[in-house]
Image (tube, rainbow, N blue to C red; front, side):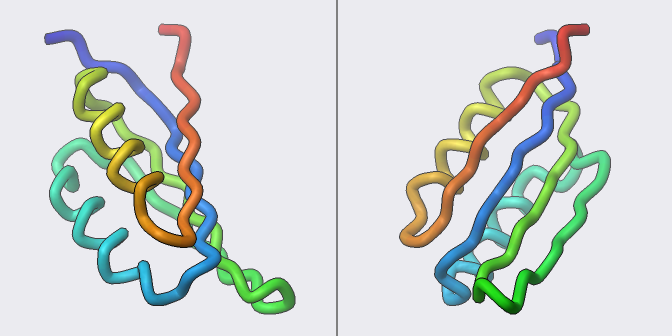
Length: 81
């Protein structure tokens, strides 16, 4: 199956979801190219950007699992290549 490069942007408004997020990302760690997390203390949120190079169904699954968590928003952008 063909792999695609994507950026998954995650906004965490519920700090208790952090363990679940880390478990989900660990499940696909072999596809993760890089990850950057930024705590935004003024707003009491965290922002994580994850670059992933994986088959389309893996990317969709990760983004969907993240987006279903309480207090978590996840959006995905795909490379055109």
